[in-house]
Image (spheres, rainbow, N blue to C red):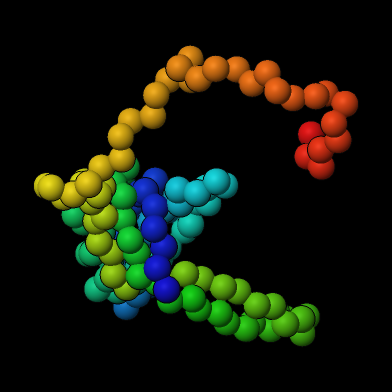
Length: 127
């Protein structure tokens, strides 16, 4: 799986125990409702984030992880995490030399206003 977006946060490496370290990255997706996705990089993968900066557009390869935990009261809980294993910069696409391009849109003032409508006519638009 992959997550596309802009780097929002790159946290420092956290040494969780003598044998385990992690580093967190937050990527903000660029869609109608942007999402801020926390992605963990662990062990030797923490170094992958060294060459990235806030604001860069990236593609992160991820694995979804889930685990089960039974608390002291006997209740079972479930936890999810998103683990990154590869990250790469995404360059803004520029048109190739010689590629056909769309002509620019004329300004709205260049169009005549509509005069052939009847306000009594029923339409099914919800607004």
